[in-house]
Length: 478
Image (tube, rainbow, N blue to C red; front, side, top):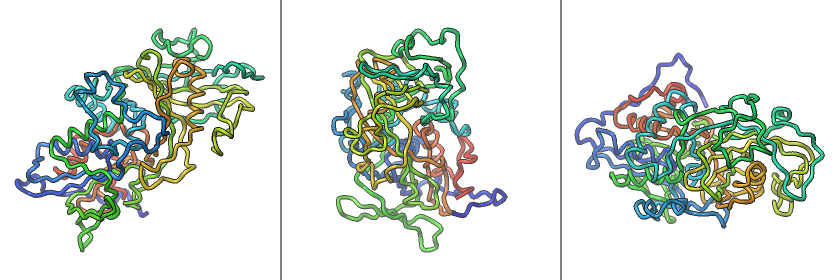
């Protein structure tokens, strides 16, 4: 891939979309949070008209069960209160929307996320969306705390260790890093741990070594990502967006001179369809580079679990460093069926860094590190779950909390692929109407509303107005 040198004049996507009556055929590829946010904000743009703007969102999958074990819960909305279930019913026609990382992420929002040129805009838009559409009930929006905790896992009954009481700091060199590790603060020794009283679902007496506050409700929040994504899709559809699931895009065709988009070709139900397109927004997450090879978006698989706690847990996102003593249980080779995660009881002390997000629906979400063991499949429906990696996470968080361990109920074991390498937002290759919005890493949920709004401005105004793209500007580098 050839990068444009910084001294090269910046290209801008020019359009005359605001001209009254001009027909625009806008195709969005990808039914994840970036694609659905883009669809939503296009329909909220002052220049949008359903009479002259045809918007179609294409999603390759038709199911949300891919990347989950067979015994996992399939609809998180069933955990909501009865009033919410009846008011915002699941639309079966949208199955496949949020089928990947957008449905299996943690849902953390933070003003201290990156990249900082779009984070403040997106964080503010999250708050506005929640107020406008009752997001507190509809998709679990709430402000929360974020904290770094150092712990030493307790051994289950029947297991023993020869270790001394090592701390996380003493063996941190061997740590298996969590997704957001780059954004954790260095922990400090706090008098009597300094843990807040409402963090009562963590074993502060036997497992907690130190506590450090990272974020407060002033700069940190959360959503349930699947409910949030599906809600934005529904709200966009109500304003005229056509959502087509089971539509796997194979080709984006350009005009004869190569300067503009001509159409998008996709396969559905064994048939090939061609969709006339004047603007094509590629928001295909980790699959983006398969459609746009010059866009450097890569994929990393991440595993996570959802646990129903015996009682609601307080609003904390915990970035952990957990010392696992020798003898700590991990999946046996027989149970893991050849998984590289299989070890049996640990032979030496190890530090792991699962992340834990308490949710307002009476559950907690926990995720582990990423891996590149299995290549990115064709669609979300084909994502493989390494159940041993999920069991590892369950053992680890259960070692510091009974609510997440012996007293909790496992609702889901799941895996997804995170898009790495960006985010990239903007025109690609000097082709009029060809826009990418992908590569948002672990901050995709956080930065989705801002991205969607900026893309809507690119499409209907010809330039971004709400924030500067800066280093995210695909037109400068791709």
